[in-house]
Image 1 (cartoon, rainbow, N blue to C red):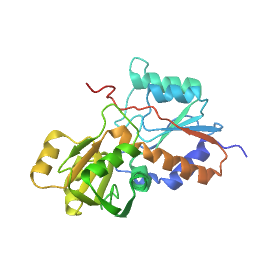
Image 2: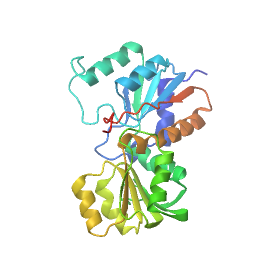
Image 3: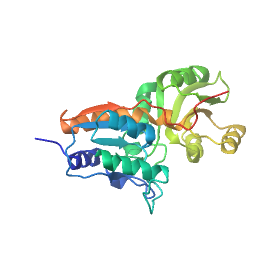
Image 4: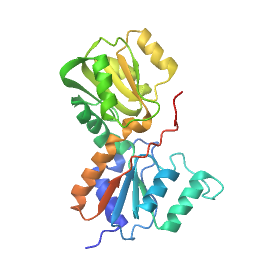
Length: 261
C-alpha cells in the first residue's frame, strides 16, 4: 500500500506528540498536500535554501526538519523574501515540509546526544517541560577529555567547540540541552552537574555562571548540537512505517557561521 504525506504525519505525531511541544512552538505539516504520495523523505535541522535544494535534488516528497519554517508566523509567502521563495519553490516542486521541534526535544534530542557521549540519563534537566537531561558517565574523565569527546562525536563546523572551566576538573555528572540552553544554567547547577553541554551560550550568562562557581561549560553550535536528533527521528519513523519509504539525513551545516579567523 502506497504511503502518503498524511500517513507520515500520523506516524511522526505518534512518536513526537504535538501536545508535548512548548506552547510557543509551531510544529507539524507546514507545506504540502497530506494526500500526496510519499516514497522518499529527507531529514534536516533547518528548512532553508540549502536543505530544500538538496531535498529537490534527492527527489524527496517530504522534508522533515527539526526547526519550524514559520516559528513566529507570517502574513505573506511572496517571493521577495527568503522564506516566501522557499515555500513557493517547495509547492512548485511538490515537496512537503514537516517539523518536529520541542516535541522531538522531549522525546529524542537528549537521548541521541547522550548515547554518543556515553551518558546514562536519569532525569530531565527541565522538569516542567521534560527538555534536556542529567546523567552520569560510565567512567569519570577530565573536562579536557570530555570536551574532546564532544568534538569527536559532533559534526565538524567552522565555529568549533567552546569550553569554560578548569580543564583538569573531573567530570562524572553531565547536564545536556541541545540547542539554545542558557536559560537552564541554574537547573544544571541545581542538578549537581559537573559540566553542562549546550549551545548558543551568551557572554554575560556564561561568565556570571562560571564566576559564581557554577559547573563547567561546553558550548557547541546550535546546528551541531541538534544534528544527532535526526538519526533518532529517522529510526523511529522507519520503525513506524516498516521501511516503506527511503530516507536520507542531510549533513549540510546550516549554522550562520561559515569561517573562523
